[in-house]
Amino acid sequence: MPSMWLTDMQKIGVAFCSGGGLFLFGGVLMFFDRSMLAMGNILFLIGLTLIIGVQKTIVFFARKQKLKGTAAFAAGILLILLRWPLVGFCVETYGIVILFGDFFATIASFAGNIPIVGPYIQMALRKISFQTRNAELPV
Image (tube, rainbow, N blue to C red):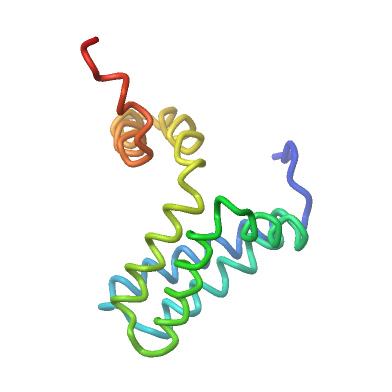
């Protein structure tokens, strides 16, 4: 199966991001296990860096409109490492929503093609990204 646009380094980055997501999910399932959440954060950041490159990662996190999300994400990781996993995860989740909220529409359009559950996932992600807020007005 040929990949259309991913280099080998980007494929490894996708694997790291997937592993990070699994560790974060496992950390939540194990009642906010600090070590699993920290490992998930590390794997996610390594994977993101491998996918888009070091310079683009720094530029992404240092953008003026993303500084609030970057600060929340970093504070969440710090709180997890300082043994406040529940509070740290909540702060980190807020940072992720601020940082990656622009991508929810892209994810929703991709998830809409999944059979059976696709329309439900797409609807939930559109509500999260507040894309249809003004479209529901009667005027």
